[in-house]
Length: 288
Image (cartoon, rainbow, N blue to C red; front, side, top):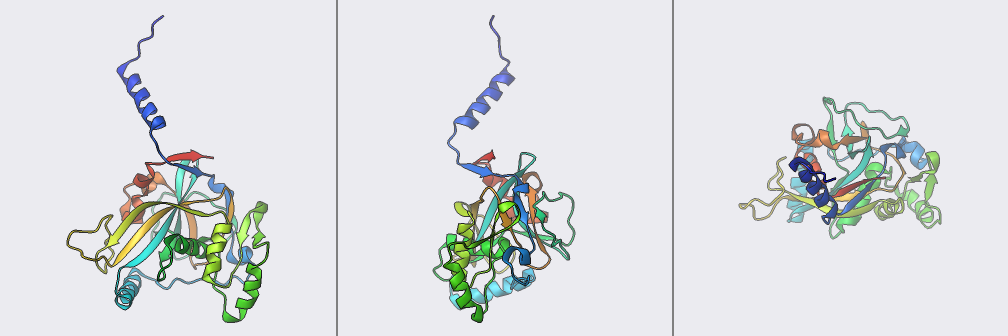
């Protein structure tokens, strides 16, 4: 018996064949509940001191960027990490949400509400490079600071921390046997801490240009700009299958935001974060 397929069925088969045969890189994603967020004191065994960012407002950030550009005499380089998890078989992006108050209770990371978040700002983990620092090293260092509870030590702690770094067991264990990162004595140890936790900096997703000292950025260098004031590179960051995370910045929490809420939502998240769904469309998202 001959079965005739309708044009609609044939079109769907072609689309499915193209999606499966095209050469596309793969992202392994794990359930958001696998990542435990703990207060900083529980993660590193310290007294729970927090890390306050240098820039408390957009104006302060731009002022410091201008000062650094004038001091160094060249474009400022910065990096940010895009970390993908899944909930209900849909990709979510880990963002740092800063608001007037945030929860400090330990527990599994949960998907963020897609409702309107008044007086809240969102950002990707990351920061600016130092001198000739490699972008991957900088991002590892910033990830250790932003999501692993890593803090700089005071001068009288350096010797003790150097001994701890030489130990064969650099981790302390958190909930369910997850590896948690302890406090270290210098920024190089922050790079090692992120790497030992299984966090890997992967592909470049996009590069954004800031032509002048304002909030506007473009995914290209405008023709009239001889040298941008800042170049910001977004990297895909591959996470381990499970990990203990700790956010030390006051009034800041780590949230998992679904792609459908980010898409074309620059008014809430900004142009860079809102572009992530398009950037990830070239990848095969593997739900583990």
